[in-house]
Length: 87
Image 1 (cartoon, rainbow, N blue to C red):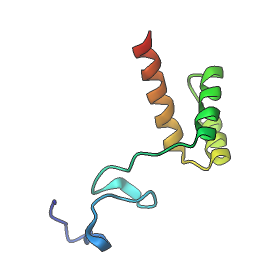
Image 2: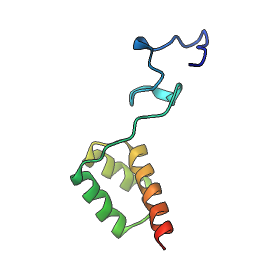
Image 3: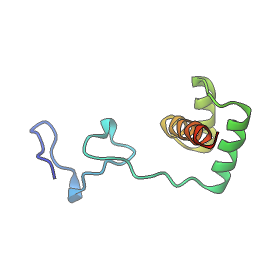
Image 4: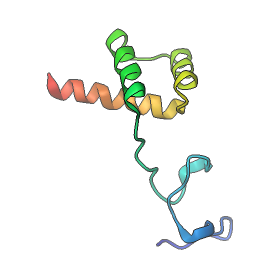
């Protein structure tokens, strides 16, 4: 692993992978989000209506689906890239 600075001790359990509640994301990548079929359906239908979300729509979707705004934003970015590859 990488050395830990004096300002941040190693996390309990020795894992360097931050949990969703850890700010800053220092120490590794997030685990992949496994979206439910219902969440995917909602995301896809939103994408069919609008490929780019504004902040207000992203907040609304995140609250409704119990996901973070970053997860919604990332899903839309990845979906636009998938569409671009298909075209």
